[in-house]
Picture (tube, rainbow, N blue to C red):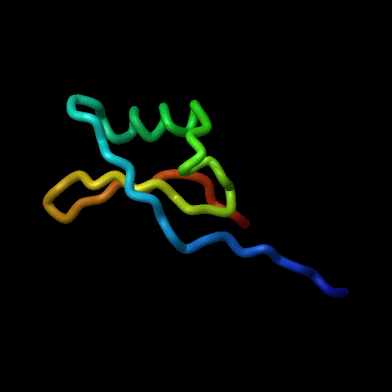
Length: 63
């Protein structure tokens, strides 16, 4: 049996985090609004720069 597997991107898109909004809330908002920058299950993922070398990744994961 032969299976063809489509692999997703290993990349991410940097998205600016507006001041005063929690990262999880903003990630949920972008996901709920189906923002085209991060709404493809094959990637890329979204990434919020939290400062100090910390990042918040979110989005869909292909299987």
